Image (cartoon, rainbow, N blue to C red; front, side, top):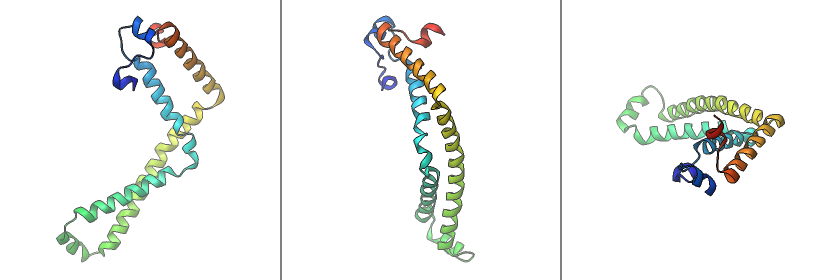
Length: 145
């Protein structure tokens, strides 16, 4: 909300700087939050669920948008129901494998960020950033980099 509404993180920050939102803090919190979200997702078969939804959507799109004349032509080579089952299985498998790959990358990043030494450094950074924003009206990024 700070980025969307251009809200400064504290009254002191708004008084000292003429900027609205502190973009560094907002983006940092969003990235860390998304990365940490994938740690509890480890036990859930999210890739399979995404694959089944994509396969179902592909089969539904074919049912809704393929004209009957094309179904009759396709019916000479393969049963239309069997064709929909094949499309469903192929799309489900491709999307599930791709999603599993990308989700596993995010899970590895999340596991690294939640490793106690790294989590402690992130905690220290957030603690210092919060004290600077609320107490002194400045950000680590603006003042030190």
